[in-house]
Length: 270
Ligand code: HPA
Image 1 (cartoon, rainbow, N blue to C red):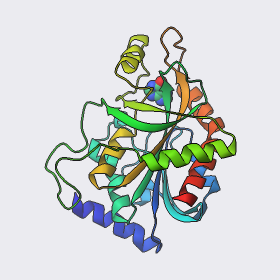
Image 2 (image 1 turned 180 degrees about the vertical axis):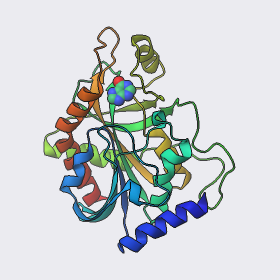
Image 3 (image 1 turned 90 degrees about the vertical axis):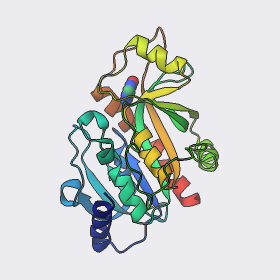
Image 4 (image 1 turned 135 degrees about the vertical axis):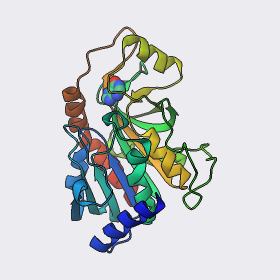
């Protein structure tokens, strides 16, 4: 695996001579962040050696190399979801590559269902922790010690400093932000009413089908992580409404400008 990651990182380096500081993974409906970037190069996933190719409608699938908030960034427009059939190694491969490009800070975003009764559709939740409930673990198997340790510390999966900064930035911009725990399930079904109750009883505030694998692999490689969620539907007991991919994309699209403003300023200040 190490050879493959190096090969992909070397390919990207050969196309772009800059030293990126931040990696950004854009979730469903949140891809417009790339419109605000000063983009140097766009690499469609199918042109990047060893990259899996995205399959889901609404995930267009390209790496954007450029600047945001005055810093050099690599942004993934479209991520690889476990429910698409990729292995956990494929889902997290781009994060491995980002580390080899020299990136130390990873920003992950997603659309998710809110289970906290204080949440509303369109809320922005800063992720302060996650519960990994997908059926496979991205670090299962032989450990590659060049990348990180066998047993990984997860005491601060999401940077408390970046969360505090992001709340302040959002408040200064006049945006309300929530904070909470993200629980990762494999999908692709949205949750049943009973499953939403389970998510809530487990101590989570929101549920989705991504993010935790990427953050686990980033922590394996000692990266600092920041996670931001858009609540696109509600799974609050007694108030479960029908969820659809179209609605998730639409709420994501409408909330993106706020998310982009917060992330851009956070990058500028970090
Ligand atoms: N559950 C799981 N994943 C999601 C949801 C949800 O309610 N909304 C957006 N992604």
